[in-house]
Length: 242
Image (cartoon, rainbow, N blue to C red; front, side):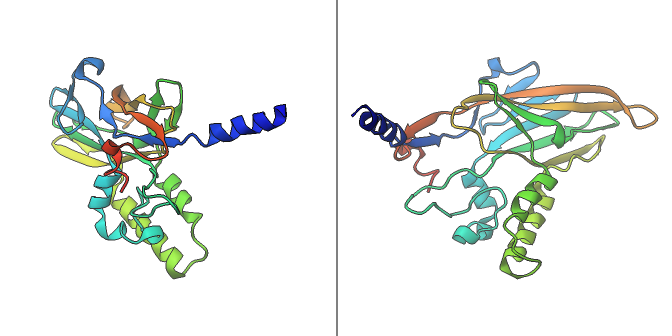
């Protein structure tokens, strides 16, 4: 009898619903670092001496609008950042595939500088750490779906790669008077993550005559989200999951 009730408890624990995450939002300006401002669209910007580096969380809904024709084919959707309009069997919502930010850099002060996306790290307040995903990692992720060097699976793989090449933050040298922007991608966050920071490490502000980094800094942007548990997303989230 004790074993029976143990299995009942396990079943009830498993059947108590799932997690649904709300939109990622910046923490207040007071919780950000020096020279940081928070804008109405959710962008957190670092501005100093005509250098501006900003980070804005990008929702799946926005990414699907950005690539509409690649987000309407269900399981065959080729949007590399989301599952498109695909939904798990029996569900009426779509899970997150990745965690995406738009990174913008405007350099109007240094002769040349560099923000390396491979050095970006997302650290949750509960200790979880997520490394950024570049072209190599994302291509490897999608290559697992390819069944050969031709056919529909390979064509979808190539279409995703083409979008990634055009839209990921490249991390090129930015000379004075230039701007650069692109997506910064991390794995999907665990359901126990509701507060976290994204740190851009090793931002190079000055190079020596050998093009070696002479002056570097790191910038931290603070964000949060609400996480709900249940059988269905709350009304406030249902539009985002459709």
